Length: 402
Image 1 (cartoon, helix red, strand yellow):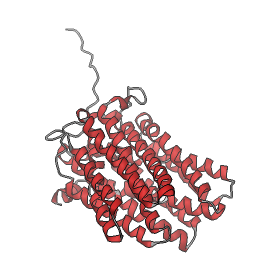
Image 2: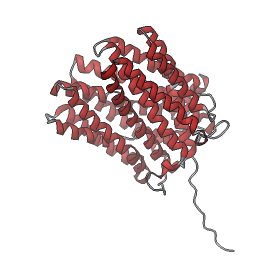
Image 3: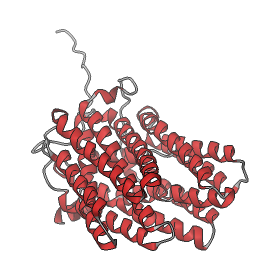
Image 4: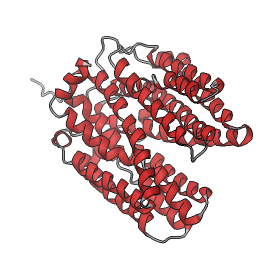
């Protein structure tokens, strides 16, 4: 823990971690807030699902694009624009009486304008710490983001059910605007300038480590989404035990990220972390009651944040600094698509065979997620003793003949 304490004492690190967590807090609130608000309006979870799908599509499309814009126009202008548009779209959903297509259009705009805080902060990190501290910083970040998924759903559910679903969504706007302003006007954001990329949009995916990270992130988050659906199906939507199980699972991920964050990232790092997730997911299939399910998901959770930390380190170490934001945007898009795919596959299997179908879906995603880094091990850099910072942007320097 001394390493993390030293990290947090580094000038700017604690502030930028806290600011980006507050700004990203709506990520753990919007889905449930939309679900509860729109079900109350239309008395249909299917209608709410259509708005959520439109929002997810918007986020998946915009992630790499708005991230790349930060290299063209600067982080602050892009973040100010996206925070403002997204806040207006979310407020419209909360307050405006619209037909279903209107809510879908507003959801699409909210997704398209969702601020690229995550790519921005992970682009800033290499400029805040030395290369030896970068991998532990990615681990601390991956662990800390679990707070979004622990507290966010709890807060929005309590506010929406006890006060108002409208207030629940507006609260996410408060976090978005307040946290966004804190992050945008932090001195560290102003000091870091992302060089304009000279590569074509999307060409960063030709880098094998970026493609590997995007694929494994898709499969890891797909397994997590399937597990979440299966847990809710196991206990039922009104049973508080599902929330307890999911919170313990997230706490296990946070703990695993902090405990394993200083381990060297060798060529098998991603494979063995995904294997632990697979083992825990497989055990959840045979769990027979509350405590055995908790035990299985604690095992699975221990390596979720560590796997994400490795993904971030692989991306950072294998692209030029000017391409890091776009690369993280693609990784984020892969994770969003994985969340949608995991939920959809689990939903079909739960309808067909009960909650166990959702756990089997998680096993399938985790199994492929373990196999991919094994089969494509050559795409996995060995970062033991290596600098995980982005590659420098260089260009020819003209020399005058003597």
